[in-house]
Every structure is written in structure tokens, then in C-alpha cells.
Amino acid sequence: MAHSYRQPGTVLTDHRFTVPLDHARPDGEHIELYAREVVATGKDPETLPWLLYLEGGPGFGARRFVGRQAWLARALTEYRVLLLDQRGTGRSTPLNRQTLPLRGTPAQQAEFLAHFRSDSIVRDAEAIRPGLTGGAPWTVLGQSFGGFCATHYLSTAPEGLSAALITGGLPSLTATADEVYEAAFPRIERKNLAHYARYPMDVERARRIAAHLADRPAELPGGHRLTVEAFQSLGILLGGGDGSHQLHYLLEDAFVPTPAGPVLSDAFLEGARALLSFAGHPLYALVHEAIYAQDPATPTAWAAERVRAGHPRFDAAKALAGDEPLLFTGETIHPWHFTTDPSLVPLRETAELLAARTGWQPLYDPARLAANEVPVAAAVYHDDMYVDTADSLATARTVRGLRTWVTDEFEHDGVRASGTRVLDRLLTLVRDDA
Image (cartoon, rainbow, N blue to C red; front, top):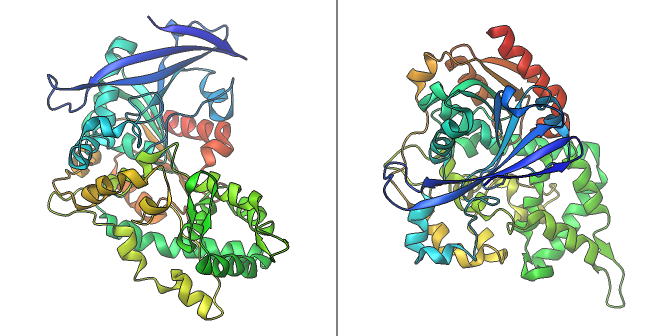
């Protein structure tokens, strides 16, 4: 039985569902999904249309709002909102170093994880929709990877959608993982240079920290190892609205004096650990490159690691040997992640098997998207670090009737930073189109 409770201005209801692990084998193993329904206090939910929210990632459960935060405030004025923990995240059969051994060997774990991409997530949504909506289509709001899922939804089950709203998540329909990262590293470099232009004092600070770590990798609380490469990956912050400022504040307090000389401070190490740990979202690291895999004959084969080798400005040793600024990386997963993060170390062999896996199937149907009849609007952030703007606009031209709002007012997390305005703009666009 669904259980309801209250927060300021909202009534929440927990829902649990059982769906096939492999939707092509409905009589096989099943897994559990969790979703949280949110309705504004005083509204009759039975009179409201549904809006399904798909979080970014992969690997993140739906945001845990308190009351009417961010975009939820706007959505609740007219929708009954379902915050779905996508399979493997949050409370939906969560996957991590503790639970994955239940699947058996690393090979069995990798085979299991092959069912945690956008195609399975969309089929989950279609499996639970009839029981919630009585068969009526619903609106989907997809942020980042959630937008990838929404694009797959339009490709495979448009009859389930009354509208699709996408924020920072229009994927390339055809790009390989290698091509995604070849486009990404120049964007990441631009974000680095913009950060150093804003905070020129951070050039020397970052070099000093990297030089220190090159000699003495640091042990972080909880068993993490802060290597130079791990330190560079703090650049994932540079794709968010206030990420450059967060990085600056972290760097400025890196060293403290001690009787043995300057050392990295406990505050810095704890701040770095909190930003770098995958303990809360290990699926992000495990299947991140798989979300781009669409050629059955081609493995992802650690695409980001291979592509990075062709961009020598990201080589910390070369930067420190000369006078170049240290470049941070961002949203790239590498083999060393599975040797430095204790939440990933036990899953290293599983990750290697996923990187070597073939048989991935295409995720998008350009012909069906070209004939799309569902109202679609997408916020495309100019020079988005995480999702290539050129790819997003190319996809927008492919999807019949899709309307874009291209803006440089927000970074990739715009729907979180100013969600009410972003959602309102997208709703206006789809309704103007209708």
C-alpha cells in the first residue's frame, strides 16, 4: 500500500513497482523500482496530469526535495510529479560494491549491468505508467542523462508522452564514445582557461598541489588515494553554474604550516574526498561510457582514457615540467578511478569487462524522430561542458517539431540553479508549438 506524508507545501506518496530486469524476458528475473509522488498541498491529485522527472547521471537517484524547491515549485502548480529513482539508483535495487557481489562473479555482474542504460529505464517508465495514469500519456522532464532517456523515449514509445521537456540533455544520435570525448576535451580546456582568467592566482596553487601529489599521493579519509590524476578530476566542477567558484575556494585553503613544513590540510583533503567519492553513485562510473555505446561490434574500451592521450595539454607531468597551467579534467571516467576510490576498487574487474563488452544496441531511431508528433522543447546551454552544444543542435534539427532555447545564462545545471524559470520557458515553448 502506498504511504503518504507531508512536507511544507507538499504531500508525498511512496510508490514501489516490480519490473523485469530484461524487458525482452518478462518471465525472467524482476527488480524493484521506487518513485516518490509529489502533489501541492490543497490540490486534488486525481485532477492533475502527471509529470515524470528523470534525473541526470547515469547513476543518480532523483533529487530529494524539501517542500517546493527549484523547478518543483513551478511543476506543482499544474502537475502531479513523479520523481523516479532510475533502476540501480536511490531506492531502486541500488547497485554498489556491497550489493553487486549478490550477482556473482565480475562477469555475471557485468552482464547484469548491461541492463541499466536508457533503453531499460524507458521500458521501466512504460511498464509503470498505465497503473499510475490509467493509460494516459504523461509529460517527461529529463535533465542531462535524463534528457538522453527522454530522447530514447521519443524514439521507441512516443505514444506514452504528451510532451517532452529536456534540459542540457540532447544527445548526439550517432556519435561514438570516442567522438563524444574528442569533442569534450577542447570544451574542458576552455572551461579551465576561463577559470584561470577569473582566478589567475589559482594557476600557481593548482601547480603547487599537483607537484606535491606527484611526490606524495595523499591518503584521504575513508581510504581514498588523492593522486595527481584524481586531483585533476576536480574539474568536473567547472561545468556547473558556481563550480569555478567552488574550485577556487577549495584551492585557496589547500596548505597549512606544520613543524615538518607545509602539508595539505585536513579541510582540503576532506573537501576533495567529498567531491571525488563515487560511494553514493557508483553506477555513474561503471556504465558512464556505455551510455554512448551503440555499435554492436565496438567496445567503449576506456574511450576517455584513450582520447585524453591525444590531448597532451592535460598531461600533468608535462605541465609541471614546463610553465603551462595544470588542466583539470571533467566528467570522464578512467581505469585509475577503480584503484583510488574504495567504493570502486572491488568493482575493477567488472568495469574492465564492461569496457571490453560488445553487443550494445542503438539507442535512437533518427527516422522515427524525424516523424515525431510529440511536442518537445529543449534548453541547450551554450558551451555546455558536459553535453556538446553542436551535437545537441544537430539532434534538435533531426527531431520534427522540437523547439530549442539556446542560452548562455546558465551552465549545465540550469534547471537546478534556476529551475522555475527554465521549466516555465520550456512549457511555454511546447504549448506554443501545440
